[in-house]
Image (tube, protein in one colour):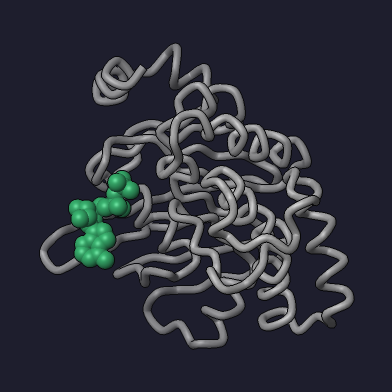
Length: 243
Ligand code: ADP
């Protein structure tokens, strides 16, 4: 359903992604693990062209964009198929919780305000924020703000939700509520790709685990293949350090 073919990205002389090939099936929850600086975030950002790959192809469903000559229309169409949950939430500070979720539906998807409001309330209830519709981000905890970020992504009804270290900016006591929400929506069969350092979460929620180091996929497989039976020395060392 999603296919990355030979995704390569360099920043100047820094070769950050060295020909990544990855297939993600519809409904899969993929966790991308790996040391800091291994290219995980860059890979996620290449998937929706927040970063333009230096080489390679991104396919979502029957739609393929080749980095050689993507038109603005193609990039726009690709982005419409994805939604991203950012490490630092990226909410509009001067908009309420409800307005934050409605924004993309009204501005990008051109839905009527009535329809957008209905969808937004529904997803905010799903993430446990039905009583915070009129609050501003500054009135919320980090965990609640991130749940707004997740609601915003869900509301767009994308083909895949991309999570870029969604809990790494949170105080430890707030991590659980965000992971619980992600786990809940994972059960609904939404395709998700999650960059995370939360190993326990990855083990429990992922169908497919990808271990990256130095711009390549070192190893991938089912959680038990990676967490209990890693074959590659680099994977074993990483897991030993982090768990
Ligand atoms: P990870 O998510 O695994 O920590 P990143 O994808 O954030 O890794 O970063 C991989 C490498 O790419 C790092 O060396 C980082 O400094 C570099 N990098 C990421 N984004 C940029 C950018 N916009 N400009 C220059 N270098 C970047």
